[in-house]
Amino acid sequence: MTKITARKDQHLDIILAGKARHGRDSGLADIHFVHEALPDLDHGKIDLGADFLGRRLKAPLLISAMTGGPSRAEAINARLAEAAQHLGIALAVGSQRAALGAEGPTPGLDMALRLRAPDTPILANIGAAQLTRGFGVDEARRVLDMVAADALVVHLNPLQEVCQPEGDRDWWGVGAALEALVKALDAPVVVKETGAGISAATAKRLVEMGVAAIDVAGAGGSNWAAVEGERSTDPADKAHAAAFADWGIPTARAILEVRAACPKTLIIGSGGVADGVDAAKAIRLGADMVGQAAGVLTAATVSTEAVVAHFRTVIRQMTTVCFCTGSPNLTALRKAPLQG
Image 1 (cartoon, rainbow, N blue to C red):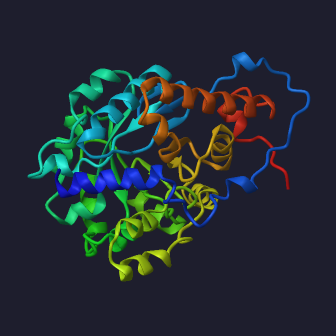
Image 2 (image 1 turned 120 degrees about the vertical axis):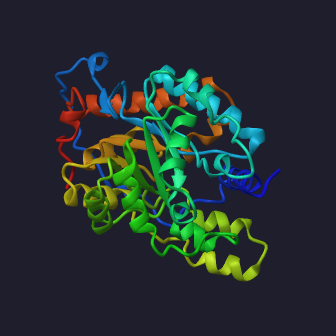
């Protein structure tokens, strides 16, 4: 097993073991809808449909990026793609860095994924740190073509990189390289954090670059400083990472602030979204789409049916929130009254 794929297997083990929880809450628990005791609605006719990357989805949900070593990646990706196709929701794949290097292709990240999900928006994925390390427009097109993706996700993970023993700590020039890629690439670019949130100021900078969407990926879910601290065998590395247990912008706050700063930008809310009620809250706060990764990871290691069952519950919960707020669709949900 190569170094990168071994590291990804360790990441999955740590998250599945519950050792990656963030020290801060997402803030979504502090949001409460005003209950409508007399909804003039048919629960069965509530419409959660949303447009995303030129495709119509049955619900505003994105299965956020996750992966693992070769023994797991192919099965996980296949299950997620099949579930996304069945449910009519979107899918973002894990980092495709290894597939471009000497370590060879990443299992499950090829055209077979698109064949499993022909109607699903699929997002390719690469880390921002790679943009100053030989990853350019040609490489971006290769990862897009690899899975016939609708867009490219560039993930921002500076905290993880500085806590990772083998991390990329030199980010000088990454912003300029990202802007150059966005302007040159003939496909939408989505920029996301990995669990520490995106501020209003950074979001405005990204919008000025021309990004198609922003995934705030706020604090409240997996903490990648904690993950890397757990992986490390060096006491100094562990102590360094432990200090960042509660670092980041909570998801609820990030959504609110980014929406206020970027009123016309497509926003994905993720980071500690536990269920469909949290997802509905994220929509109400200003997200257009809601992402979930760790919350569905256990199901993804079991079967396609388990993933489908998980998201059916999320969708049912979102529908019930709409019903109990008198919201026939997402447009109405975005205006549903909140408790003071």
